[in-house]
Length: 141
Image (cartoon, rainbow, N blue to C red; front, top):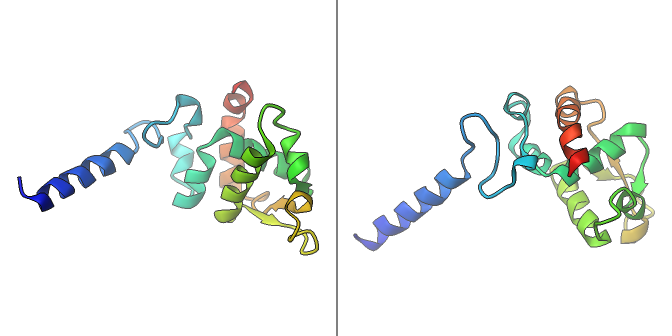
């Protein structure tokens, strides 16, 4: 088989592995508890959908949406006693990267630990539906 054909075949195989199954929206290699309900996942943009596949990110967003107030990384980390501060920070940055979370205060923006984050999607019907539909799953894990 020519070299170009081998690379094309490998790329096709990798791409097929990343495709969602018919009934589930799940990236290749992920555990079942990270699934999003397919009827709700379709209403989200691809970056937001990828971010919300992870249960910890949904819990962080749920926490920020609850009282609609800004929270520091340390306050968010207190919700996850088994997770390290760096793990929570990573997931907050992923949420920030897709635009569902933003830094709320310019003053604390330079200092990582005192930086406050706020949800930008507290009023989003689609995201609220995803968070409600997955809450029981996220509480178990």
